[in-house]
Image 1 (spheres, rainbow, N blue to C red):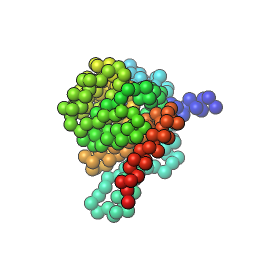
Image 2 (cartoon, helix red, strand yellow):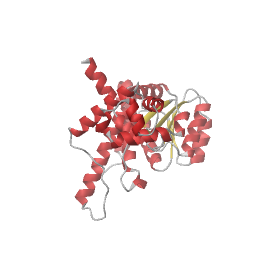
Image 3 (cartoon, helix red, strand yellow):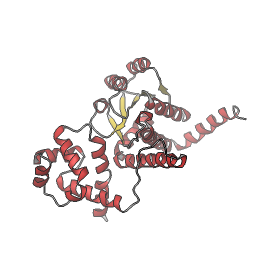
Image 4 (tube, rainbow, N blue to C red):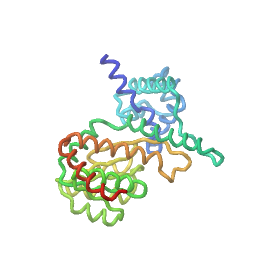
Amino acid sequence: MEKSMEAGEIMGGCLVKIKQGLETFKPSEKKIAQYILNNTEELKHLSITELAGKCGSSEASIVRFCKSLELKGYQELKLAVSLESSHKASKKKVLFEQIGIEDSTKDIISKVSSGNLQAIQDTMNVLAPDELDRAIESIDKARSISIFGAGASSIVALDAQYKFMRINIPTNMYFDSHIQMTSAVHLTKEDVAIGISYSGRTKEVVDALRIAKEKGATTICITQFGDSPILSAADIKLLTASSENNFRSGAMASRIAQLTVIDSLFIGVACKRYDEVIDHLEETRKAVKGMKY
């Protein structure tokens, strides 16, 4: 049983991490990643020396690549890829297919829904429970929360503000990047700052989170797996994964992935404060009830 559980933990999200990190890997790691993605079945039969030869890399680079995926070494990589590819082959594959102009409404619903479902599944595979625990604990103890986001991520930030305000946690979210920076300056070690950026490279979000960190606030980032500037500004890293279709500018699946993390944070904090949360939710429900027909 212990062996089975350990294998399952290793399996979770290895191929997802490789796909998500493809654009941020170093050149030597990118060659290894691309070869593995194109040859998942062959990998299980290759020694580390043979893999190094096939992808024009070195054994040391392969070991470093394994470490970047939070694996102990090459044998764990082989096991993870083998288990995950076998698991996927045994299930009906969910694809976020390209949407065509001649697709029917039914096709569009199916493709968008499949992409959203896959984003949630992939995020579940790369989101570390221990990091989520740390984030929940920090928010539960915080005097206030400040949330930074731009573009589509700002909509996710607004959703988070609404949720935490409903359970009486002072929460600030500003659409204006200058005000985000200004609010970050006034944070202290008693506060939490959350930066949301799918790419991890949105300058105003990274800069605001970095200032918050310098002021002593506990900083949390919600971003995709892979190397990016926002990671250096975050004490706690909550990773997401998604495969976007050809309408990438709409940030559809990535938004669903981010909202999944926000919902997990909210429920986690609510569970720690269950009795008072129930009262707060009832009070806010009553407050807006009179505004409905």
